[in-house]
Amino acid sequence: MTKKIAISVPDDVAARLAEEPNVSAFVTESVRQRMAGERTRRALRQVGFRLADDRLAEAGRTLDEAQAAITPELRARAAALLSESSRGRLTAGG
Image 1 (tube, helix red, strand yellow):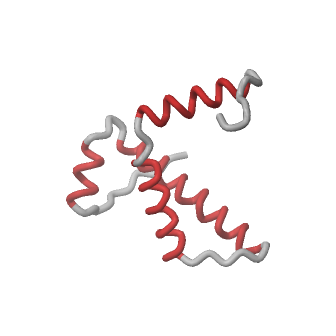
Image 2 (cartoon, one colour):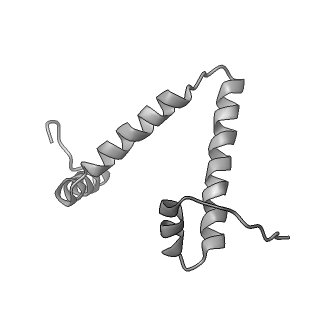
């Protein structure tokens, strides 16, 4: 079952949504990802982990920076190393 709703969003979000061929599917997937994150954080809290929102945001920024630093050359080298190691040809020292 689906339900039609109307929402108001800031201009930058509206501009991003305008790029999507299926805004409903995009928003649905985005909200489902958020819900999955909430379930994960709730489960971690239940087993004793304490996750502060500011620390999670910091970790997200660090991850974004690390991913931005991955050049095509670095990605190709990593793929080559993975291929070598899966064939058992990687020696100590690379």
